[in-house]
Length: 114
Length: 115
Image 1 (cartoon, rainbow over the protein chains, first blue to last red):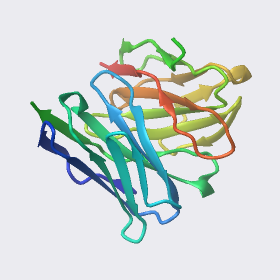
Image 2 (cartoon, helix red, strand yellow):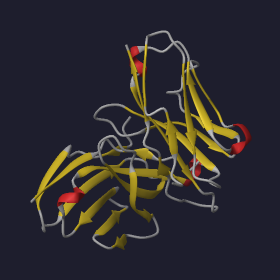
Image 3 (cartoon, each protein chain N blue to C red):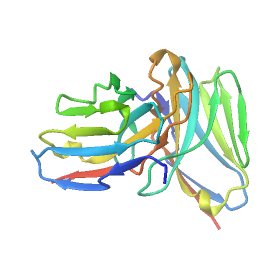
């Protein structure tokens, strides 16, 4: 039962253009969402988060949008840079769990072409 | 360096052997998590500690797996009688307890290969 889904395993974008990574979830109890970036042979690195009381959060080149009615979130990177090439995971958590554990999607590999 | 530290980085073991991994979280982070990641998958939750108390264990954590966090500082994850299906990257993460959601900081992981 995959509660967090990233349906695009890979994405290629030209340098300077916008990268849009998508994530869908099924558990309506999720109320906190995060995006992590992962380079090979390293652990995931936190990028940006959003609480369910918001529909947008921005940090520099990174913006996360949350559509609760559609159970969908997306990460926008603009402008994309070659150093952004990595695997991106979205993760979600439910306050009711009491442990703040995160459920991760399967990841999207982003390649930014110079 | 004050990040999450995991040792060893790589471990190759024969099927049936026991292995133990260590995680040193960021100082003063009360919350500690263990995750497992296999190829093509996202990290899967294994277990969670709040200080020294193990508050949740995933059903993925069979009775061959045990985790401890004595004194609420470092943590160990032991796998007994390893099987080839245990081959994966084992990730540790920690986060501060500020009474709500905070991002978790991950270590570089321990890659286990069971031959």
